[in-house]
Length: 58
Ligand SMILES: [Zn+2]
Image 1 (cartoon, rainbow, N blue to C red):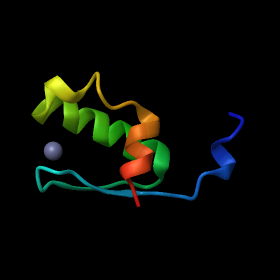
Image 2 (image 1 turned 120 degrees about the vertical axis):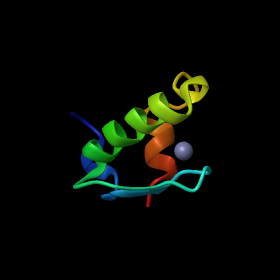
Image 3 (image 1 turned 135 degrees about the vertical axis):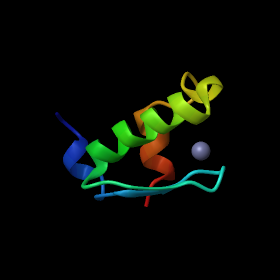
């Protein structure tokens, strides 16, 4: 996957709803965040792709 190595490892995300998500690595965090969006914010699933999720992660 070209480009992924340039991203700083981000494994934590604080959802605006107050939920704190923590995963092993960026890839796992994206899956975790997408699962959380699907469960709690189904209207946002379409709005946030992996780039958006990683942008919000830290
Ligand atoms: Zn949330």
